[in-house]
Image (cartoon, rainbow, N blue to C red; front, side, top):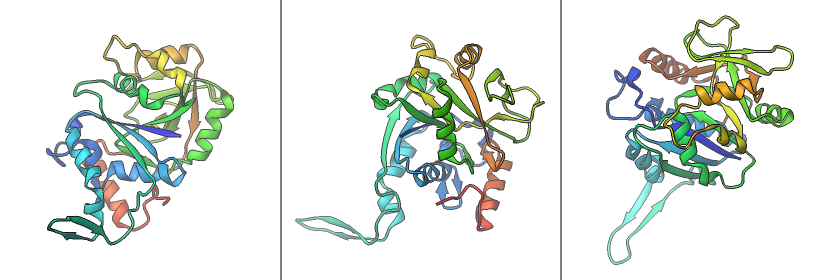
Length: 261
């Protein structure tokens, strides 16, 4: 199943880490956070990615265009028949990555609409942000999504209360309210890791530059089309310098809780 990753934001709150890289390219260890996210999906067998690019798109393009050379020893032969010989197989063999420029200032909903041709006739697709990692069981998430038949599944996580809160029925899991950035009362917020039915795109207005987390999400919630998958284990975004330091400390400790590959 295809994995759509939103990679276009400016990342203004983490400028003290890097001015030269877009947020998805900020490293955890030796690799950018986008690589960690993609390795997670690939571990569960989802190796076809669509990256929605915007700010400093060329940095992300350059990373993947030169991935073999950046991660392997190689021998260059110069002359009439120039060649490059790589001395080991890539760790991302079998991945298919579409890098799509979706606009410098496009908001999340607009970015998703602009890559819809790459989704073709897929009934469902994954959607997530390019700045958060977690130990989400993607098999269980997908099975839950397919079991309820609604337009959208949101992974509800329990981080510090500074993100959008999900109000939902605890028995059925149906979301009844979505508040973008209130104080958390029920203890869960949207951690991304969405699963969408293709019809989810019908909630997005092609004539407006819009965030799907605002009016489109609110409308779907009101229509009873959004469900929450409850994830109680590790989740962490890279939103600030403090988050950057935490994720790198966890990686350097040798057993980061999101690493499943």
